Length: 196
Image 1 (cartoon, helix red, strand yellow):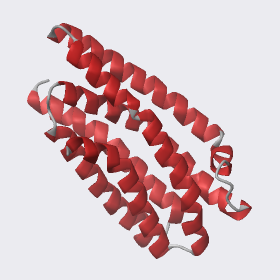
Image 2 (spheres, one colour; image 1 turned 45 degrees about the vertical axis):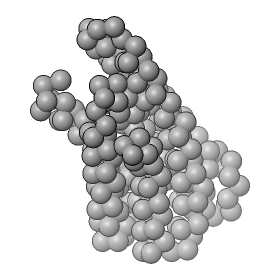
Image 3 (cartoon, one colour; image 1 turned 180 degrees about the horizontal axis):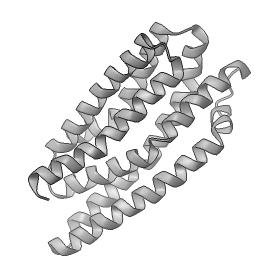
């Protein structure tokens, strides 16, 4: 169950984004969400391997000192990988969206969504690393709680940004990016409260 919740969280956030945009914005904004969400969700899926690698190496570590080294390396790799993919998305948003062959009038809004979500990719990668660290410690509850609360934060952010403030596609992306920023902070807070 916790694994499913963590794997589905980015797709759930994208679905909530699309629902708010579809309800509160125009038809063009809703249509732009199609290719934009595809880019964002496929990127999240492609970056998901890191949590499994962290889990595998963390489980194989012979002692706590080796486990700490694995976790430190995992966080460093996650940060570098996230920054690299973020830069790629920021520089090539139109090309990434264009791979799905949308109508030309949809590309600016879809590219805006991809660019804003790109700022959250390093945080998503860190969340994946923290998830793998929790799983290696046989903690299934923390990742599930963090993913659930992140989805709730996204829903509240979508309500504020899209419905209340009328920010459209960009507002939906900001809500999701901010909810992705919440996740690694939540993991760090929980770890410090436990004294890990």
